[in-house]
Image 1 (cartoon, rainbow, N blue to C red):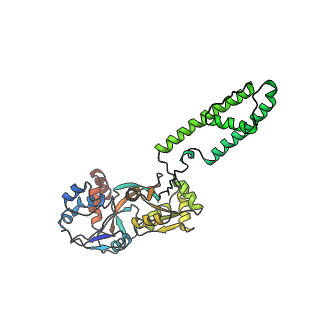
Image 2 (cartoon, rainbow, N blue to C red; image 1 turned 90 degrees about the vertical axis):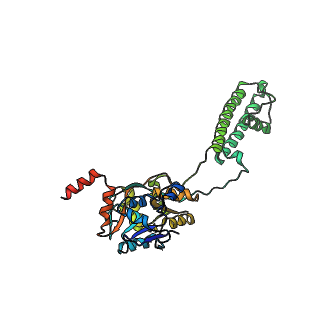
Image 3 (spheres, rainbow, N blue to C red; image 1 turned 45 degrees about the vertical axis):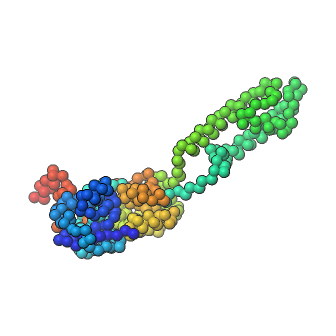
Length: 359
């Protein structure tokens, strides 16, 4: 379950207990960072480098406050002014988060798609026939029978010119032996039968070379088949009613509403009017919904979803990308901390330019 930790100090800061890579943990000890080999998270690092560096490190372990159950409840508390900062990354759009002020953007991240990992069924009973599909094996069997019938007809006619006689079963067995690259006890005497036999030897060599290559590929390469590979393919599946989109916040997908791209307009139409839209209170709960329902697609920041996929092999991130969005820190309206943190995030030359424009 996802928890949020509220810290009540001179600056009332609301932390998520774990939402990597934005908030990995909250610990003021540098020794803990050294032992774990990772920092407390991008958002926590930003806060520690700002005006809060004299406040947050002074907190004693065990006196950090109380836990909130969901990210959404933390967001509501922050909007209502119960806290000064929500230690989370928000899409940098003023119209996407009413009742909140945002800092300048600090991260550009792609929006990724998380789906349930394909179900694998391993059965080695017929492993030797897996390099070719059933249709290919059926075509090979039909070619052997047809060639045997043709051979039987040729030998029947050519017995008048001293061709070796073959019955019907032996004629089919000739091409079955050639397919397995076996020799013949008696070679044909006429050029007609020799030409047909030579052609089959060439076909047999080609088939077995392909078979060997596919067998080697099967043992050396792990191939996975996903329901879709690109964002456009996902939209088509939504239009067919085969999948539903899951988001963490309702506002996370609002950027599609004003998009000029046709694929994003179609996505918004399917979500807003055709009922292909679900919501989760946290990314962890969203991941659990994806695991429980194979027709659900979780949309979220690629950084977060890749960490979820690395932690649980039952889900995977599709390689295709969606929109790129900027992320900012969130504050209640008219918060005095928004400008202070924005000044830290902005380079000096850009900040001077903004100050010059305001003057």
